[in-house]
Amino acid sequence: MGRVVNNRWRYNAVSITPYNPIYRDEKGVYLNDEIFRACKVGKSMELDDYLVLENACIESVKIIMSLTKCSSLSIRYLEKHSEPLCFFEEEKRILNDTYFSLADKQFVNNVNLEIVMKLILRESVWCQLVNLSKRLYVRFGYDYYMYFNTRLKMEKYKNHIEKNGLFVW
Image (cartoon, rainbow, N blue to C red):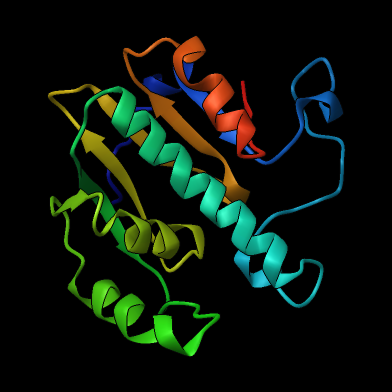
């Protein structure tokens, strides 16, 4: 029997995505047929476009960590799926080493956040990133949906995130 997941957090979560809300209907369903995923690189997505998106997602987490004065996050509910998708030979060792060493309740700081985020965004692992004392929760959905729960008002970070090309709603 799988674990019981409490999804009440969704009611207060703020979504950060690459999907423009002007393409949503009145129920919030996204009507455009674009899908952002690392596995689409070289097929329906150019590598340069993907790297810009990946970096914007990583920067979003860094921005919110900075504004909440959060120096580290803890990995929760870690699931390892597949070995890392590497786009460059020079990132292969660090992504693989990090993948194999990741553990539940391990701390992630600004030094290794980028690597952990790449593993998450490239669908090698799934987890939540949490700082209980700062009440900061970062959760990940499919196709580059990120969900943030924080005491920080959206107005404090919305413009910073949207300058990076993502949408906050």
